[in-house]
Image (cartoon, rainbow, N blue to C red; front, side):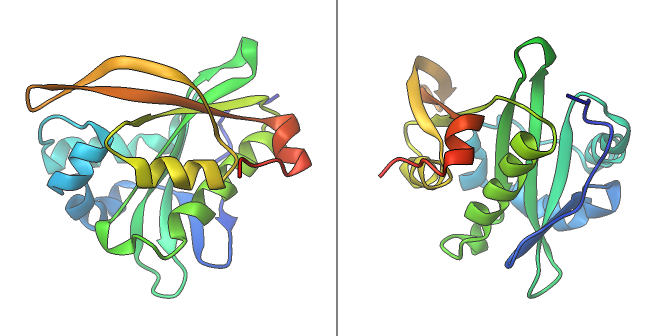
Length: 186
């Protein structure tokens, strides 16, 4: 297992995943400031553009995470990001998260992006487990993750406080042997 130093470009039929840069911030800002995306991802607060530029500008030198821009092939437009983070070298695992612009829903871009980056985690990086959390009020994302091979493992009760309400998070994971065998939940 290597670290996350190499920042690949992963190409699918619908999307290209490539290293994210600070130049992507203008394209990502509408997504990052969208109230519904904030709710679905549990993101509190607004971040200044200068801070975002610094953050995305530093992603290329990180050795413990992989931040990729999701680019729609048909238009060449950056429509989101896909990330492997919280790397646990000793246990050959990491977390996954993805966020896409609201206007991309239902077109298969997120499903393909998920399969590309998770496939990279298993096939190239040699990871055994990729996990994520999805909030209970986001069943559409949960179905998409299940289609990509993630299985529920448990519930983190009251994990998010959103507008005065406690929201559960479902912990899900995909495992390399299941991925290689093509096993996905029905």
